[in-house]
Length: 175
Length: 175
Image 1 (spheres, rainbow over the protein chains, first blue to last red):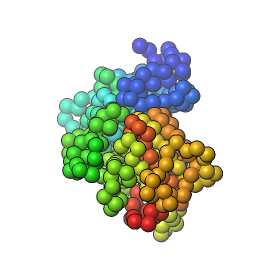
Image 2 (cartoon, rainbow over the protein chains, first blue to last red):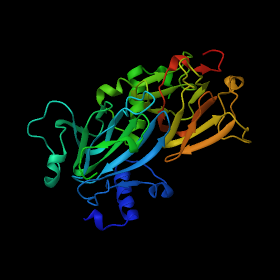
Image 3 (cartoon, each protein chain N blue to C red):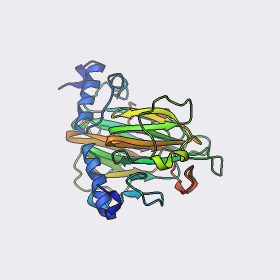
Image 4 (cartoon, rainbow over the protein chains, first blue to last red):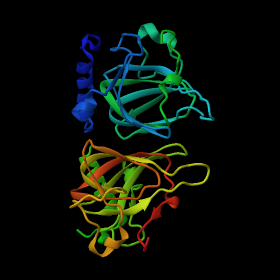
């Protein structure tokens, strides 16, 4: 499978297959609203994140995201923004598959996932948290994190304060 | 089935059976954290709500709730609270079964659900919204609402601003 060779709707349909594995029901018109993010790198098989946003208000946000097998969401953090907001805080609750999540903190020896070979020096967070269905983890604001799915891919709910993607800071030099 | 005759853990296990119908995975220790609310009325078969809280911070909240067949969550609203909070706003996303939701607004003719006979004068919101799997609806702050499951029961995700149950105002005279 080369995700990069697919059209957007083909990727969206593939994402929906993962949602169905987790018994998540989207309407046909919602499938077209699935966001396919390659972070401008054009290397979706390696680096990307697909998500459906249920709601994003000035107060709270909820979405479900999918990572394809061994796809990696690049390292980033949610910094404080104006008006006293300390930055986005987010809670992951895994629904299907395995998520290898890396956050700031003591580096884990022999981690189960690695960034793509050519991007290794663009990743710094090395404290490993492994999530499978029913596991959850809350990432504090202003904390670097990145994550990769295991061999089956992964479906995860994300509950958070407001999402303001334009404020996110990515560590990858090309993003 | 008389829910009122069951112990708390028996009700919690029944709730978990509904969660499993929606492919929602709780750990054994989480099943014991399922909240069984009879609103102090001791009539759980008629009036109640069961829920599992994933996260409730000062910024956001996420839970999944279960209504047993034809069980009703009594009418209430989330008023403004101190410090400029306009009151809790919540987004329901149905996962399983049918929810008959009633909110303030134009009364719906021939509604599909009715409050329990003896409680009818304790309910006022009469604008009907019907939710099945994949449907969602956002209830603004400070708006009266109540809801009842259809014959199969219902499982619904609720994404919201912070939950502060102690501020909720119920219209039922006995709550």
